[in-house]
Length: 410
Image 1 (tube, helix red, strand yellow):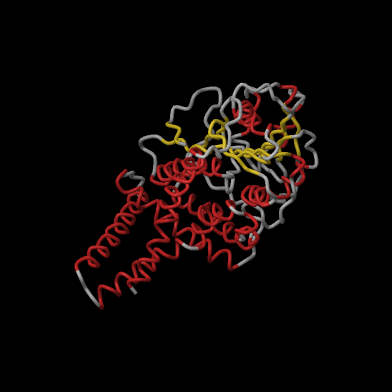
Image 2 (spheres, rainbow, N blue to C red):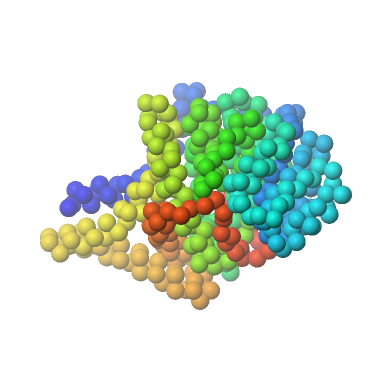
């Protein structure tokens, strides 16, 4: 049992901390050997034609600001096409966008009365994209003005098939634990993506801002839950690189409540298990080399290994204490109990809309892993489809013509 305990503990620590330390060391060594990937020129004059695709199901509350944000981006208007996909919307979104079409010649709208889901919306949109590059962005996000310029420069490298932008969560000091934890999580993810890019490739992209070569697009299965993840990993599996650009970012507010965030994360976790089942080829290190190492360490273990390790650690620790005792094992058990007690206290405070900085880290860590376990159950129950269940955000999309008054946390 003691050997099993240390093995399980190693797996958990490696997943969340060890991989970051290891890939950081590998990147440092590769830099010293002169094998790192070169950073593209910031002062490039490379300005290809781009289509910005915005899926927008019942997003009327966001659309005016989103459209204004798209029109204010620092990119030549004659090289930028806007394509809003509002199929199935019943809140006036289609009528509003069609009215705006008369003002802006580079704006196109895909409507339709049936809600077929994001996957089908993307497939329909891609049939109308005529530009060499396409960028997907969510309707409830605000892009920084230089996002497109900072993205397209990477496509001068023929090995680069896609660029993953950065997701930023805007929180203030009174924000709920869900928002604070979400921001901390994405800050750490940003750090890992920088390392992943320099080592070889990003393993997964956030759908809030994701660019790719139009010619490389391949439709994904209709019931896919994580389309952005599947598309980017399949591109990497074909031998291309997906790079991370932190200066192309999409800002959004955190989920309105923990229950809303749970709904979103459970679906993402179910999508993670679905992706693992469909990307088994990436588990072959002899074929994919660095990609397999990154994919298993950064993604697969977070979904398929570590969440199951955490309750096993408590159980093994309790059995060891019951059989052998010993102050060291008692101390470890007390530490685990204290951590999860703090997480539960954070949950109770969150239910009362009270934020405590000392508790939101254990709360959010535990919350994320519980959502993965719930996602595992959801995945095995089946009945998946590509229609997203919208999670309510803390407030409406911030006005894109002003700097957000909230702290933007990468």
